[in-house]
Image: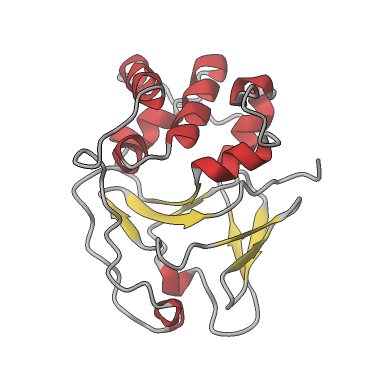
Length: 204
């Protein structure tokens, strides 16, 4: 999976769209609101039904929902490595679950240095990090967070991380938390769970 490549015909359009939106602000009217309706963390532990597929793709939610740094990271590896990730999440038909870091999470990764850019990091490393945030299938909260013990999630990178009942993610290189107010965001091609840190597949 580390050499993941997608030769999809709309790649250049997707990259252009991602880069254009990443450097512009989106209005509140344009933002795609999370589709979860119950922020109670007990939702993670109950057998509630999965939300129906949403109207927008994962990429559209990221682009229009304020995940600017995530879009920049996706566009960066597409431009440098021809990875095709933006187009995969924009036009792809397969279902994925994305653990989406906030802009603040990416800022913390860069040391909260206003001058630092995601493009300062090696593209291969950024690709691995992005793939570490994605797992195959449409995995809602109750199939991600265990009632007790720990649940292992296998990612597109081939590496795993663990999730606890307290919504904590223990990754290879660090830890993060699933946002209890922003989970089960339903896309047409998957599910998004917002997390408060960029999880790392390596110890930096």
